[in-house]
Image (tube, one colour):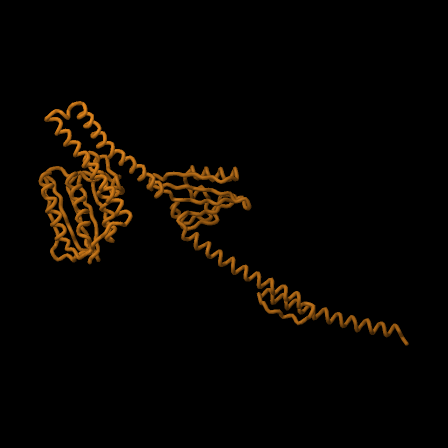
Length: 406
């Protein structure tokens, strides 16, 4: 027996079988790799040796796709939040070039497209730029606030360092409304103190005078008592207005809404205020068409608004002037107006005339607590309307308010 021949044949058969197995395995691996590249979840392998590998890779693909879908969803939600935020968000790299900016950042810095521009170019305020530079140098969070005088705007910038990329996150907030509310609070306290100080000081002086012997004076005693009564009435009226303001601001005012003719309302109020206007040397007239549609309103509340507006017009209009009441129909509402030829309102005071206790320097000498216009604003808003003023200093004022049709 030729063992060499047998060994050679056996070796060739085994080599051929291994070569065929290697070729089949290589082809299956290539097909499997191709299916993975095409993101196909099903396995194309039919070789037992690849079944576990195929299952493991398919599981990884499924988990990866699920994770990718979750990340896409979270990114979409984050993008929606950033789009709707009123605070500006900027992301800058280590060189100070902005890589991301939400719409609010563009609005606050008045820049159409901040991306790919430098922080210095977009921010433009040296105090804010210096705060960003400090953050880059120290690696610590920085905060800085500035006033933009031309826009009467207050901005606060918070810079947070990014330890991974050496960049920074810049959060800009508009504090204008907060600052305005703080100003209103300070003015409220200041004006309230001013309004209370005057009658209280007068009462104290009058009482001390009476205690020093004026009470027994048949002429001075009654006169001083009358002045005390007048000061007490001022305090009582102020307390009543504060109570009214508290009620309307808390929504506790009860409106008895009914159809109301605008001309009837204006003529009724003009009749009540005409004597006061004549005593001040002013003419008071009404201009209102008869065919205006009715409004759905509480008559006593609207009369209170008109009385306050006419009283102010009379108080700040010199003798020989005129106060006129108007009404006209607009789309879905009636617009009322009280126009005077008085001293007018300074432009700086116009945005604040409806704040409680707010009075311009010119108004301080005229008495009153500065609550009437605040009450009027709340009453008109409770009717679903709006109130505003147009004025030019030295040429009079016109107060408007609207009430919807009934």
